[in-house]
Image 1 (cartoon, helix red, strand yellow):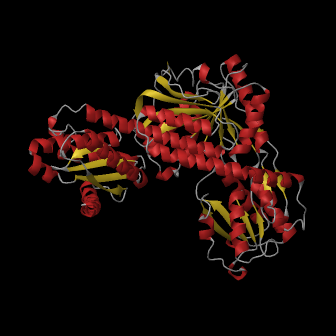
Image 2 (cartoon, rainbow, N blue to C red):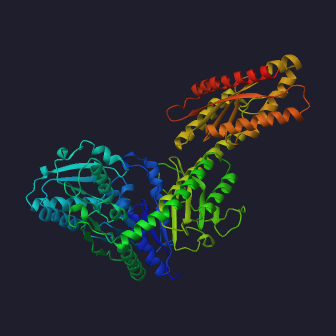
Length: 638
């Protein structure tokens, strides 16, 4: 490799906006033998609703892009959404120690590659006014500030002003990008008579296509009664019926030009110690199609036919991959030991045919603290590396390295030019990051799998830490003297804490109440020493049946409570069957005159139902119904 890698800082690459840019970058890097690392920010909420601590560590990890690791950093317009304000975003970019190139939006003092959103939106609006005699508009925009979309809106209003059309002729609807939200906002427009507008202008194609579907279902003819336009020229705009008038941003060309600009700035910086920011405008194109009434009865182009063929071919592959993700999610909910987690992740990554994936963990997790400055640790290790060429999982020693000097040890970099990495974070800690080489641009599936890895590792670390606390208990005040498990006091502290930590990680779980069958009969018939033996034997069965991270406590003489994070009712039923089988085998081999059996009932905990005392009472009621069934079966057998 002749050049140091590029870094790309982005808030979502699985979108119709991000993918064409990424393909342009990939084309340039492949032709010039350059690796590039995509830092995918895992932000699932709007900035005003997101935890400041979580956001700070997510953004802080971007400091891994420095002079030792990359030549320059690229960033897209949507990355601004990670930050609470545009000013904070600009400050962050200017703090990076390498040249920065903004793609899609012009930023003063930073190299930028963009189209003239303002002029293109203005020209398209003028077309509606002059060619289609439109005077009343529905403007559909998003409910967050995205700089390039704000420019489009400004261009729209400038065209209206020049044509002498007052702002009162514009109805505005603000929506998010979640499919279905816009349809809910449009429900007052049930017929053409309800519409006080002749055309619908949307700031992007996704909103345009959803609104077209809504009005078509309402019986409104497009373009005869309503004319439509979007922005982005995404693949779906060709599939829309009628095809959507839109703007092609030449996103792939923007990605290529950004790479060229990045290396020009890097080379200038290497020669002179600094560089002059460069602004480049890529020529966008308006695509006039049937949705505005410009063409009639147009035949499908070859590009449209090819697009439909690809969609049909990928449909079955998509279903298969979704099935694998569902299985992985289920497995991650019942895997809590780190060794088991490594094995599970290896198996799932091989099934998904990911060429390579490396999971990096910091030697000491970073606590999310908004009052402290973020500092990338000097010590990290490779927790797991998966190479699709491996035939089977082989445990490897965890190799240590300094992430300030390299993103990965060279032997783990894989063979692809593209490396995607994302933070392993929850709201409390940042544990490290994941780097993978995807085998296609089907990023929505890989991003989903990355979230599963993130949640599984974060949960396992926290639960393992809790398990270590249990093992390290020195105080007998929390443990049962006879069995060595938690007593009622220990349950109150560590059981509730386990529930709280699970909810912080957006996981649920179960509280289980267990009551030994006929312990009083054992005590009365064979003596209390035999009763103690029965209790200890039952505890061993419970410990073997449940996971090391589950909280098991003796609640009373013959009663036990288990707090099981991430456990489902289906998995609980499997545990009950296993306990029955283990009890049967013990009865056959123990040589004791008494037999063991136990009744278990469970209840799910959630954010709306998390009080341990109330959950125990409810689980006890469920257990009582099971015990009644046990007694019925015994009477029938006798």
